[in-house]
Length: 563
Image 1 (cartoon, rainbow, N blue to C red):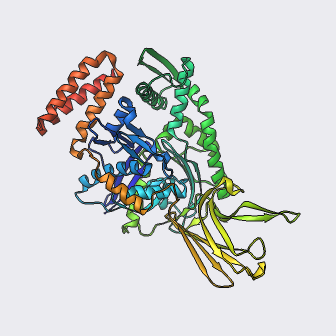
Image 2: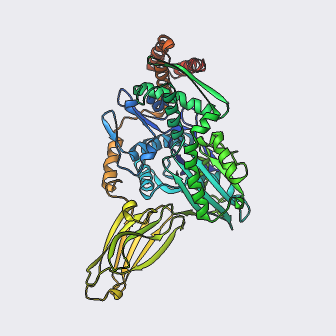
Image 3: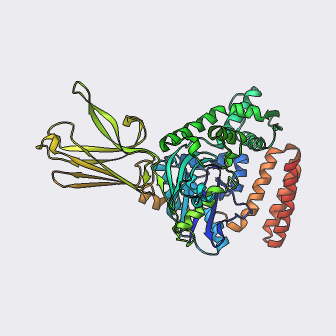
């Protein structure tokens, strides 16, 4: 069984491709969207999803979100008595998604296609694969999120020569891809993006404006109140997509809040962020060597793409309205399901071939000689340029910089800067050469091969001796986990106390009630009574009674929030 997964910054989804096409699976709360949030409760149990998201407001010290932005780094987060890496936090979200899908399907899942931002680096892609391994599945393929969105829109069924631009503005990342349909192949011509630009940044901007208007310095509120404020501002941000003006009111500690913002001011405040969106979009178009009038359709996906200012910016740049008829939160997950169907060789999809591109330039360090004959090391020499269609293989020849050199040190980098100091080092390969030979006869042929799963193979052949060297770059020392570390982390994760799936509804409802207790001072006595009563009902272990009281409490909390 193979599934498609959108492992998102803000929300994650899972589904599969079956007889009726792509189908997404709901979590125990009946929602297709599972918040990408992890928390530890007072008993040391791990919570994932809505329950964790509510505790992010009431217990921020034991909850964490937005960890997708840290993938590929060695950053660690302490929750309770445990320290987690980004791969482990993502693995816990994957485990929750897999449990939901397995409950719906009634069978075990072994493989998955997972979507990643098109601009994810080599290290970030490897970290995503590791998260899948820690969750107990094999990641059959990583698919770029804009490419997945194109599949969700059925762009692979368009006539030959059709060209599209897909823009994906999610909670934490922004991606652009330029695609063309040609003889049954969906070919990616160029991709660009910003791994630190998304809906969260627009929320940060609103928080800054709020504090500025009220004359409050940053850090004015403790973490619990700041979490409550950001939740209010998130609601306001969403409402600004439909309303000309919104009002934020409430009580934050000793501060009575009454703040208004309209669409016009929101758009003006957002201009620096919109400019950051334009930069990768223009770069992708330049790399694809296309003008706006040569594009047939523009697709907008990602939850943050709902903001009207985003559609307006795209419309001005391309002179037409973007397509937005597929649910923006679900498009990437649906496309991942289509890609999973392709991997499973579904008969309706086997004629479609999907290509992708290398998101960064890959190359090696070289020494250059100036006009006076002086040697200067540290220059970057590209071998595979960014936006090369993958899989791809390129080779070039290199020679020692000085006579009687015994070895060539081949340092492998990714990046776009002419100096290696400003790029990311991926690995190194030392090649022995004959110091007795003249420089011109000590040729070393260096070949880079980059596959569709983001694995770089580096091969060096000494022409004079035929000796062959090889380096397979599958991890970055110090950043990513090696096989032994993965084994140890798997054992540690297995010991975690994770709440059973069938109790998630109750856990999430109690977490929501506790969040509302934090937020609504006037209703605390009533909320405390409701919480106490529901906990007592849960302890009876009487399923029907629990379901009845759960529905009653849900209705009561809905009414409280609406008021």
